[in-house]
Image: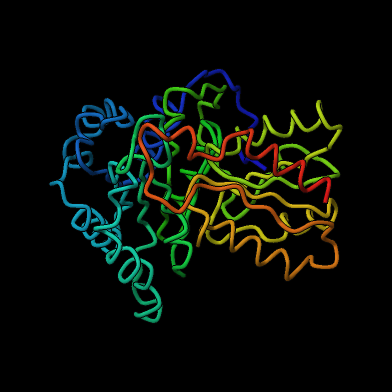
Length: 335
C-alpha cells in the first residue's frame, strides 16, 4: 500500500513532531515554491507542528496570518492559482466555518468554472480535528460531513503518525484542493516508527486493518483505535470475528473495499464522533444497503455523537466509546 517503504523505519515519532513537522519540511525541501501559513504558524503553532520551519526555510515561506480563516483560505487559493504549493493551517477545525464559502464556492469550483484553464489543486488545508478530552463546544468538532457534500475537493483523516505523513504528502502532491483533518488527541498520544524518507499513501483507498468474517467495523481518525479495542473485546467475550476498516479518505471514499467486506460479513457498524444526523455514516449506510442489500444479515448500525453541541463535562457520555460500540456489535450478532 505504501510507496517507498523499503527505507529503514528508524524514527520513533508522535503525530506532532515528525508526523507533521517533518512531513511539511520534506515537502518544502523538495517542492519550491511551497509555502505554509496560518495563525501562529511561524512560532510553531499551538500544537508545535511547524516548529523550526521558519528558521529553516525563511519568513517568506513560513509565516503568520491575521485571525481570519476566510482570508487564510482565500490567500491559499490565490497562491495555488499563481503556481505555489500552498499549505494553509486553520488553527482548529471548529473555526473552519468562516472559510466555508472560500472552500466550497471558490476552491472546489475553480477548475470546473474555468473549463480546466485554471485550478487551485496545489492547495492543502490542514486543521486539528475531533475531541481532545476537554475541548468543549469550540475545540472538539468533527466537520468532515459538511465538506463531503462538496464535489471538487478531497477530505482526508489519518489515524496515526505513519498514515499522517503518507496521506499528507499525497494531499500536497494531489492536483485537487484537499482538506486534511488531524485528530488532535493523537498529537501527543500516538507514537509509531515512521520512515524518515518521503513516502505516500494513496488517497481514496481504505485500509483493512484487521480481517474478519462476522462483522465489518468502519471508522476513521481517532475512532479507529476505539473500534480496534471493540474488535478485540468481541473476539474475546463473544467469539465474534470483526473486520476493521480505516476509511482514511472521506471524499471520495472507497466504496469497493467497504462493500466487499460487508458482502462477506453480512453486518456493518459505522462509528464517528460527529452528530449522527447527517453524519458521514449515513452516506456509507445508504450506499451499502443499495449495493449489498441481499447480503445483509442485520440492519446497519451507526454509533455516533448525539445531536447536541459538543459538551464539556459530559464529553465521556457524548463520545461513541468502546462500550457503546460493543453493545452495537452484540445487537448485530443477535439480530
